[in-house]
Image (tube, rainbow, N blue to C red):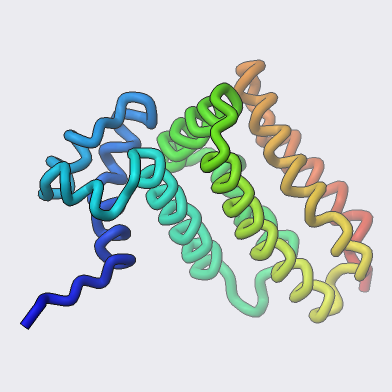
Length: 198
C-alpha cells in the first residue's frame, strides 16, 4: 500500500523547520542545501515541495502572519476595545520587545528584495499578505462598529491605516528613527475622531 503524504502539511513542516534558519541567515544568505539539512531531508525532496527558496520564505512568512493572528486573538476577549485590537495588530512595529526584531529584519530584507528585483511572485505574495492583514483589520473595525464603539465611517480608514503603518515603519528604518510613539499617537488621534463618545 502506498504511503499518502499530505503535501500541504509537509510544505508547512519543512518551512517550520527552517524558520530559525531564515531568522539567522536572512533571505539572501539562505541556501537550499541548508534548508534540506535543517529540515532533515534531501535537496531533491525540497524541490518536490518548493520550486525555489523564495517559496519557502513565503511559507515561513505566512506562518509568521498566522502566529501573529493567533497572538492577537489570544490577547483579546469580548471586552477588549477596538483601539486596543488595532494596536495589537500593529504590534510587530509598535512592540518594544526584542522578540519581533528578527521578524522585522526578515521583513525589511524581504521588502528590499521585492523592491530591487520587482519579482512577480514576490509582488503577488506581498499582495496576498496585505489582503490577509486587511481582512483582519476589516473584521476588527466591523466588530467595533457592531459593538457601538466606533463610527461607521471607520471602514474607510482600513486601507489608510495599513499604508500608514508601513510608511512609518519604512521611514523609521530608512532614517534610523524610532517612530513607534509617533505612530501610536497617530492611531490615538484617529480614534479620537471615530470613537463614539458615551
